[in-house]
Image (cartoon, rainbow over all chains, first blue to last red; front, side):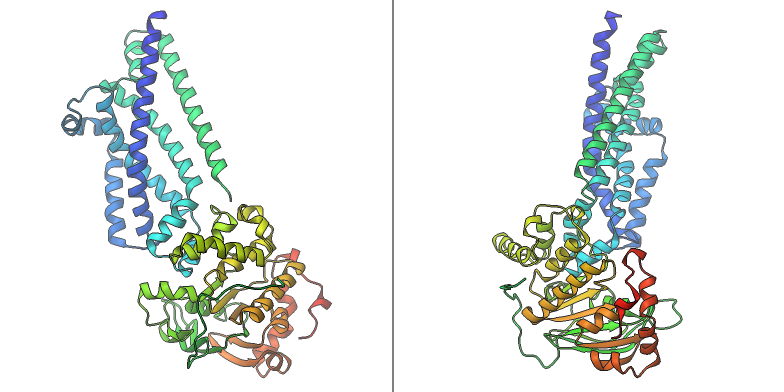
Length: 216
Length: 281
């Protein structure tokens, strides 16, 4: 048992690193893509059918490729960016590419949840479309966005286990290599317990933060 | 409320037109069998309160949305403080919007902003320097008796307090025109009376032009200088409130006066007044 403890620890750190870095990138890219999706949507601030369809198609295509297949498809791209296709850093590339469209759709839904009457009221106060986005749309959606990013982070833990299985390291990788291939049931169970604790912590933290920032 | 020292950002300049000037306003929504507005005329001078009255579906909301330029009318002219709002570019319209304050039925305060930040919003949008914004906001909050609520969020306030925040926000840029959409509809009797006296105070002290859209005939009778009765998108009657409501010349007006009670009953039962309270206009 003592032999696997350092392995468990480093696997946990690898998972945390993969999730933290990829979620950070997904938040930035997802906010950008999601905001444009919401702004251009028929109920948005500046409806544009063609822009919305273009962005929606982009978001849908990358979401329709199974994540495991996406990792393989992206191998040359990953090698180009990171220099290698194996390891934790290399796993972050497919995680970001796979997570961004997902984040964008969550952001879009959170933004469209803002009362359209509120946006119109602010337009009558003299807001330009850009001011409507920065001063109303995004601040009013903050609690919804926090909840969206909580869901995103949990999904990324799930994805990171798959990325781990193809050489990315992390808890998923450890569970398969030790727990499954070397018949170490204790390692398999421990990996799952750590993952459960991680997910619960993220969900709890996200809920608490969203509640704190929600003044409705 | 006694002392009012709110400076006007938009000095009243002499103009050939009354502060609100609407001519031949027509709006038909795609697919609708009849026009929502059909050649509506409206004139409101500074320092007066004008009520637009009508049963539901008469076109009141469409008229408000057109005057506020949330809808583009199909035909007609809208002049606010002299400038033609139907022919302005988007950028010019945004600039001109500082001349009009609107209190919406649902108020539409920003839940993510404090009371002070809500009142500051229109000034921020128009690029007012921070120091001037802070002064102006403090002034308005003090005038509306909500200075102690500055750091709170709208959700923490009572309905009447929220209404005053909405009024303070609408008046922040020193507008020439104040539009109020059903300002009394979601309030209890006491708060309703307080809102009406506040509107009265705004007219008397600021000398601006107030347009109230409502089906609340009773408050209109006590508050408005003049009224316009709207039915099926047309003006059926218009004139001094005492004249129109005491000697209605149209069937619609008579029906509306007799329906005053049922119009209340349609609302939240908590706000239903006693029958004798309505009285005769």
